[in-house]
Image (cartoon, rainbow, N blue to C red; front, side, top):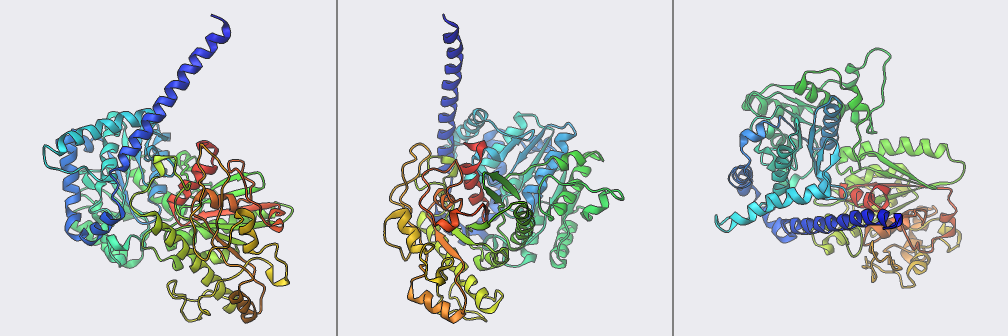
Amino acid sequence: MSPLVKTCVPFATKLTKKIDVNKKYEECVKTLNTLQSNAQTLEKTRLTRDKLAPLHVPNMVKWASLVVGITLDDIDRLKVIHVSGTKGKGSTCAYCESILRHQGFKTGFFSSPHLVEVRERFQVNGQPLSREKFVDYFWDVYNKLEATKDHNNESMPAYFAFLTLMAYNIFLKEQTDVAIIEVGIGGQYDSTNLVRKPAVCGVTSLGMDHVSILGNTIEKIAWQKAGIFKPGVPAFTSPQCSEALKVLHERAEEKGCHLEVAPHFSSYERPGEKFKLGIAGHMQKVNASLALQLTRSWMKSQGVLKGLVECKWLGRNQTIKKNKLTYYLDGAHTLESIQQCVDWFQKHSKREANSISGKVIKILLFNTTGDRDVTQLLRPLMSCGFDGAVFCPNISYTTSSSADITNMTVSKETQLQKCQHNMETWKMLSLAKRKYGEIEEVDSQTGSGSSPLKNGVHTNTKNCSNGTSSLKMSKLTKNCNNSNLSSGHVDNSQSHDRIDQSKQNNTASSSSCTDSQDLDTQKQLGTNCDDFFVNFSCIYDALLWASHGRDQNLKDPCNLPAQIQEADHVQVLVTGSIHLVGGVLGIVSDDYN
């Protein structure tokens, strides 16, 4: 056998094995997705949540002990750090994991949601579970549940409940020293709350989110989040508003545990000592302080600074730099986290722009989901001075090639309608800002408010008041598509696929500067129209447009206005949804391509 053949045979064997593992992994994820509730079922569940919610944890205990073979004593041995909250749960857990791993402990970390691949939810020693191990652990749990459900006249656990069972099983089999468990939604009735004796519990900053599930007041939300407290188990919280803190203390007394508020981060620093955290954003000091209290309680140790400095948590205050292009990624989806995102983006984008000689433009890529108030989330972003805004649903490609990014809980039509609504809301806010110099309270449904809008009129594209048409959205759309401008969102007739990157027919929904209504707006405001807005049916096409063809991971760029292409650098902020950020990472990050 020749040396060349000897070299090729092992390579071919490895390649065949990798392809086989990838195929098995995709089959697992497709099977897992059958446990997702469809949009109709999810709505029925919301309507009956008060009756069904108390059954979640007892069902988890039953599935774990009687079917999967995990007892509550087994889970106690994992020495769980259990974390609930509205903002910063993932970051706080990531700090805890990094701190303990750098102290030599074998760590397990269960988080949600995933960014690109579902296996990311399970980390062992700071690394996502391999595809090969995911396949083994998945079928171990799934087959046990499937084999007994008919015999016991039981249904399969829902998507998140199944993953929670899988997480505890993984960490037990991997023999981790600690399991850091991030609560899904709430706490009291969350699937993760089957843990009977965690080592320590934490509550991050609270705010108004998931109100249709947790309640529409901060007191109701605090009650749910404190549901993870256990008798005799130390508990810590980030600083809270007085109403929330009162409820947390009442719940701690009710549960029979001691609750402490984490101090300001500066209390850990020696005089004259400053160090940079591994995750950007000034709110991270709040999360890091809570993590310090949780890990100190867990191990009674002071040597944790290295873990804080070297901690990374993808999709949160993350930047990806490319040639003449920078992506700023943050999965903020509450008012408070959006405000922190704005502070972070303005600081770092300004610093970058000052280092660049030439024209820098800023683009917003936004989506939000569920029952969140889009006006409330978009209003703080107006202060960033974006040159344009792009909107799309959390769909990576028009035709998805990965089961990891499949979402059955909401219909595609609903996502597209939500996306269109997001864009219309941004237009109304832009018009209000131009007319009154500040953002008034605008009703995102009607356009009414203390500063009334004229028929909810659309704003226009850049520099079109001077009579030129090079930047008109109508021209842009024709260049990309050779089709007429759509008055609403139109799905793409050809889809981008990772395997077949065929030429895309991009149909963007936007407003043209030549619209008579928009010309009336110019006269009304006495100002040039200086923003543009576009709406796409998938993340790939939105990125293709927002990056202006500069990203090598994106093929077949459409013809873009010359004045935009001539920019020396483009900054793209992606925010509003962690799922949107995950979809973007899966497309633009070299780690996933």
